[in-house]
Image 1 (tube, one colour):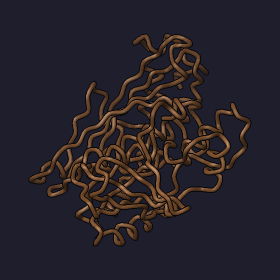
Image 2 (cartoon, helix red, strand yellow):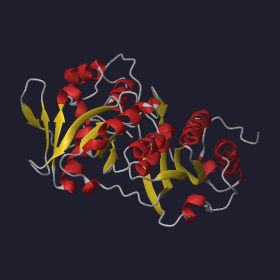
Image 3 (cartoon, helix red, strand yellow):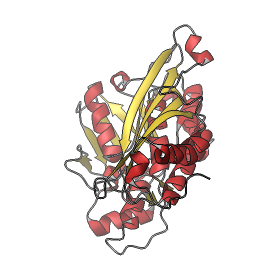
Image 4 (cartoon, helix red, strand yellow):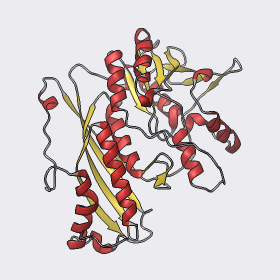
Length: 340
């Protein structure tokens, strides 16, 4: 092994032998990209299919702590980018990964993050094919920031967009809500909270393919990251020009998450998720979509939670367990910063 340092130094970003050793031993030896050029050259049979379209996305990840119950920043980076492609109907294929590393960061931490990314990429059926590293001085970032970009292929005839949601369409989620936000809040240790909660980090490409096979007329989907379910639904309602009605009693929530939120004055509908999505399907395909979700481990807790309605266009309302109703507005401000 040429890399003998326990911690990253500025020399590892200087463009010389130290930088090459870091890249080769920590990153490319694990990701095994095709070649060592400054770009990836992508080929896939799906690209040659008449009517196929490319999907492209990019995202940055800054989370505190960088390792948390159920994952780390590397897990987030792969799952978040895969999910951004999958909810648009694309089959994720390739990722890039760029790392901003703080001087003094332990090399062992980088190795763990890279190993997490490799595992998640393999499970999701994608390859990390190119990337970049930069080293900044102490205090210029929090250990490591990761920026990823993803490319996928949308098969011919598949057209998903939030503007396609229509009154009568049924809304489904693939599992319990708020675990990621609650787990991160507890992991920070500021509030002396003790919990067994873990992040819900999961790549959802395989689940979306199962849903689309069962419900080929699915209208739209969104992954529920910052702002949670409430913010995603408000964006959909506004873009589609329809209202959305939720059933509070149908929302899948752990008692531990609701209890934490009650204690701290938070609303679980706004907590971040990293392995959850909402999908709208025509009513005649709702049960098939639900059954398809439940065939996947990341969809075991799937539930029908509401419907689109012609009433109160652009607004989300929830029927409460007490028989009343309340408006579920867009998140204002930030419940919990540095969450993904």
